Amino acid sequence: MRNREVAELFYEAADILEYQQVEWKPRAYRKAAQMIENLGEDIEKIYAREGKAGLTEIPGIGESIADHIAEYLETGKVEKFEKLKEKAPSGTAELMEIRGLGAKKIKKLSDTLGVRTLSDLKNAIVTHRLRRLEGFGEKSEENLARAIEQYEKSHSRINLGRALPLADEVVSALKRQCENTSSKVDLSKIIYTGSLRRLKETIGDIDILAEAEKGEALRVMNCFVSLPDVEQVILKGSTKSSVILREGTAIDLRVVPSESYGAALQYFTGSKEHNIELRNIAIKNGYKLSEYGLYLKESGKQIAGSSEEEIYERLGLAYIPPELRENRGEIKAAGKNALPKLIEAGDFRGDLHVHTDYSEGKDSLKTMIGKAEVLGYEYIAITDHSRSQKVANGLEIEKLKAQWEEIDKLSKQFRIKILKGSEVDILSDGSLDYPDEILKELDVVLGSVHSGFALPERKMTERIVTALENRHLDILAHPSGRLFGKREAYAVNFEKVFEAAAANGKVMEINSQPSRLDLNDELILHAKTFGLKFCISTDSHAVSDLASMRYGLGQARRGWLKKEDVVNTYPYSRLKEVFKKLKP
Image (cartoon, rainbow, N blue to C red; front, side, top):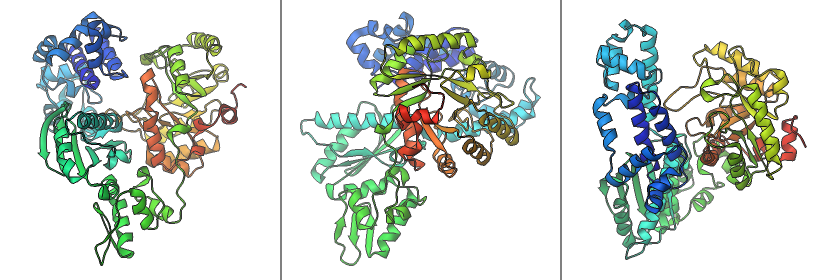
């Protein structure tokens, strides 16, 4: 799909307009970009089928923006945006990504110090020119240096939320391409491997493995390098090819015969540390293990290789799910047949963190509830922002009560249980953003830190622990506060946080938003040792976000969680035991 590509076009235009201090258009362009990004259908297909009229049916897209989209899809550029780029420094869009820099600061840096690119900014920091500028200072230099380091680190790897859909698209496109050629090739066995298959939060590039016999391998490679989204072919061979897609991601494809498919899948999935341990076990048992198969060391005879399951079985191990293959005790557990039965996608009964257009969500209350019911959920918690979140249109008490009234009316129209909730700000002193008389009326209260991220560790820990001691708080949402490429996790002592959460019966959120994935797998493993329960939530701001549960699920599986560990796998009758305020 070209949705991401078109969305990026409008994000970039919004950044440039903001730099030029244009007031309302940046917001309109960003809203349009978000809607395009969240579309469930390829925008190019919508335009081909319905023309411009189909584009204007998308919320947030009027005649003018539809014209720009049509022009881009037909010509590959938007003339108006090309002229915009000529008027702004080429590095503006990248500088806007640096935490702590806004349009006004970037313009000041450009006008006074000639800073127009990230490289210019780094040079200004190293030479200490920044600190002499009014409105900046030594502390600003230090903060920006850290922000640049974080930006470069995150942008050298691909976020799971971007990589997984992209890999799915490439696999599907390759299957179609091979089926539509004159000499059809059956790609029934094709899958992404590496850290993506292990569902790590970020990956380096995308590796794909396919099964095909020798005579068909080259035909598969021909299909791969001729995919419509391929910008550059780096390497083309009979067993491995590498390409760069138009949006910049590197994709490697390997093709192996059926007798080696399982061994190759195991090998290329990794991790490196997991594979080293497996090879050591193989050697101890008189075998040799490689990406081609498992062989008897003395005779060289292959004894396994067509499936991963037979590889593990021959080594005396239970099958180890890809998410656990990090050499964190999974091999020892597999040898004792003591691996946990990990939580699965079909286990979810509901979502406990959802926003609507009452605050900063894109879709209405009714639309969000309807989609949750279509997904087969038994319950959904509506958790719009509390009043302190002005930037997110946080709900004043009067508006919150109006939402309750609408929920009561909608409850009669839907089968699904609709829980009255709120994502309530944890204020700087650890108190919650609504008074007790409001909090006690809510079915579910999520507590979140949305400000004061730079507090020292001791202060931040005290703040969160105080909130966890509040009897009205149910769930600690996105506990570390990180945003990939934008904000590092705040300094906090998780030992004390988990201890307080366990003592007060609180639930830890695993936030599925691809920009968060918070808690991450390591913190999940640590929290589990305190006997804590979790919820996996989407933090949805649009109907399309409800599908992001898969990303949080991946982190939960990497954290060795079972269905029993996650409260939103419970039926409503049991969820009431967790959140005592829930009604029959």
